[in-house]
Image (tube, rainbow, N blue to C red):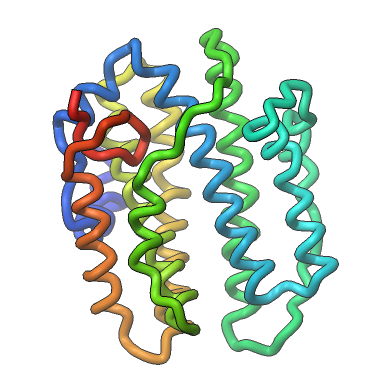
Length: 253
């Protein structure tokens, strides 16, 4: 595969590969609507996480409120089922200079990386929705997987370790997404496979950005925390799961 150089660090970072059983079930045509729906929601959740980090740690209130408003059309569509929500054009209008409220040495870099991530994830949301529309797949609410909550249980409750752990969790989510896009692509139709392959570079960069920020912010080496959170991530992926989601474990059905 021509993306081996991009994927090698991802595979080294993750403590397990996606089990074949998950791939077999996820690739079944009847599961495509569920998989795309969960992918759509995951793109919004990724943007929400990055927005929360900016608002919580670095932005002044007007900037934080402005960036929160970026998400509203997408949230109206997903959570309130406003099917006439104006998110169709919203991704073209994500412009706002974020004012940093403190002099933390990593504040500007966090803003730069997270704003780019937000814009890319919301654009991916739009792309997934277009694919669903083209295939006649209507959006319907689904339950969240246990994956993100399971990771967040590992987050330490005192700063700056809380922020560092959240960034490490973000790195694992993005790395797993990248690995699954690459693993699923050969099993899907050409159009969807091409779309998933097109996402690899941005997902790989997101994982690297999260990890680099975590090490920059942490006063100590983050490797022990990376390993510990990685153990939990691998367990969530390797254990049986009662539902199929983009980040779920081995289907128990």
